[in-house]
Amino acid sequence: MRNTKTAELVLTALFAAIIIIMAFTPLGYIPLVVINATIIHIPVILGALFCGSKKGGFLGFVFGLTSFIKNTVMPSSLSAFVFSPVLAASMVGTSGIFKSAFICFVPRILVGILPYYVYLGVRKAVTSENKKIWSTVLNVLIGVFLLVGCRAFINKVFDANPLSTGAVWAISAIVGVVVFAALEVFTLKKSGSVSAFIYAGVVGAMTNTILVMGGIFVLYKNAYADALSIDPGAVLGVIGGVISFNGVIEAIVAAIIVAALGVALNKIKPIQK
View 1 (cartoon, one colour):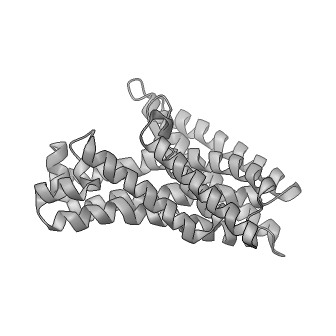
View 2: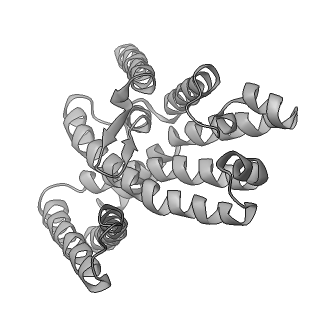
């Protein structure tokens, strides 16, 4: 038991170090032609899975702290104040301290908590007596999610010379069906843990995107509009675009990396059920 706790502490420290390095270097992003996909949340998700929700929450706090420091010391955009209580206080007053602290820390802490329970829930479902039903339902959802993400990605890539709607849907559907079929074979014949890792990655990434962008809309709608020089009525559309494109693409990337690394790490240090 003592060795297990020591190993978890060492692993937590390692994940924290990785988060810090990724946050302050280009290593925290993957260039994908039309977007630099953020992957800083991935060590938070993996830390939650292999070290538990409490340590995952701590890693999420570290993620939020790096965001706070980076946006305060070296802001890279006019909207950096939404992650910096210091900048927010000077722009919108005392209330900005609490608003920005919420956006900067709460979503990131939850990134280190929710994936752990999603993993356990999905793992339990795909190893139950109704394994085939649960596996198929989950794989269908993954296929649909990938279809949506593929469609958004194609439309963005070919924004200047857009493909026909039918072609975009056809390509996206093919990708979704192929992935669904591959997952069906893998989960039914080998292991259902891959589905659990995939869902943990998706939930972790989408938790960050949805709560951060949702928090901006609820707490900073007008200030955010001013920062972007747009009409307040257009903020919802901008935020919806970020969630539907950036959020989905980053969730797909997170699902792939979390599944790949999770399966490998699980052989070395099995996740406690």
